[in-house]
Length: 77
Image (cartoon, rainbow, N blue to C red; front, side, top):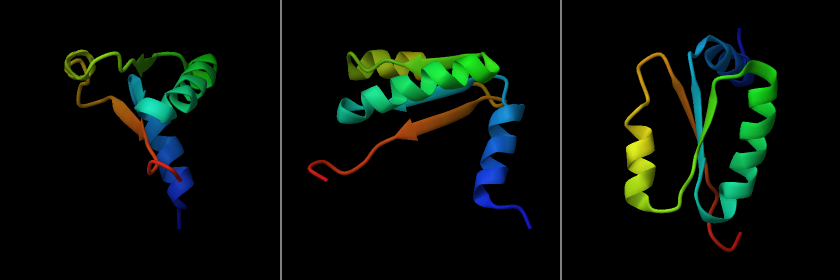
């Protein structure tokens, strides 16, 4: 039986592109993941969150064979 981590890693390795987003206080963690994942596999896009409309415009490029990672945690935690 495959673990959730093994399934996630398989999904990410098969994806054509990986998009990563982290809003507000999660942005540094998303940037960190983008940087190192791009070093390992390439074709990694970090969605910048300067404005909500720009964020959605960047997400319009996501295709069926791509993967998306959203990073968030509750405020004040």
